[in-house]
Length: 348
Image 1 (cartoon, rainbow, N blue to C red):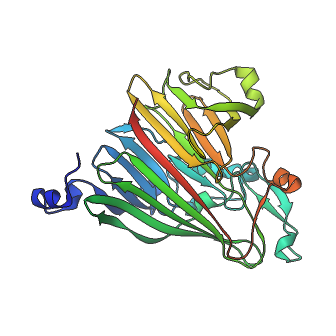
Image 2: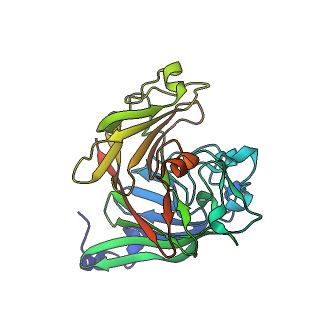
Image 3: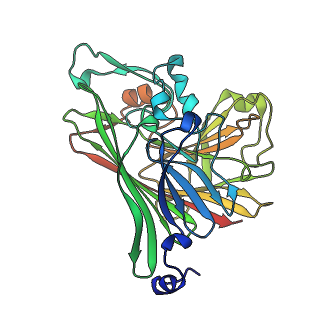
């Protein structure tokens, strides 16, 4: 049990003995210069918020056991990002961590889409790369720290990410991250607002990536799947199990699924990865009306071993299809969308 505020004051002269939030700057290699907020709840849950990477969550662990995926790219400084390189696939050179945000006006694979809404004749179209620009944009850190609510201590951080261009989109993401001292959950609240004066497309997706040792041979995917709406061709070719995972496979080609989920309770979706050998379960919960779509990304390749859980505003067919079938979200001036997501680390 977490001590009360009075008890903690009697036991220690500094709250950081129990947990807290600390701002540091990474200092070496491709990560050099990234401001990072280190969260420690005191229960064993520890995670890093990458302020200069859209306030995404990078490293994440519980009781010394990592569950946030670590790819070979490391947490690359956004100043090194080449947005238009490799035919839009350069996003993969910065792809690592528990959460990588996709959006704010585009998700999924790239391509050209009309830009007539911006009324600038030289900009007839916009060319997007994989999963958009947001994940490689620095935030303006507006606050962080520890806040007492009676005997409950909330660790928190908030920042603002702006994706904007002259004669194009002007979108603002305000992200708030909270965790309780002594707790085992992370709460994420995002609000995306059109800060401009033209109707602007909006797509949003969380690429939530789980890795070893949570992910290992025999780990399980838990979800109430009503129907699998789509799967990549690699599923039929490789036939890797997407419910009970095998170990790493050399040369594995990613398998991707779009699942229609049944709510676990009124209007709430929940999925999880469970490692019975470790006795560890990591679940993700979100509101179905905010993220009506969900993808499972199975990347069992040796050296890139990960599973992705992806709540999404749009189906896997992507940007151009959403414009054609009328499902694209168009935010009017000062119009907003808010998203609520909770991560929990539990005993399996």
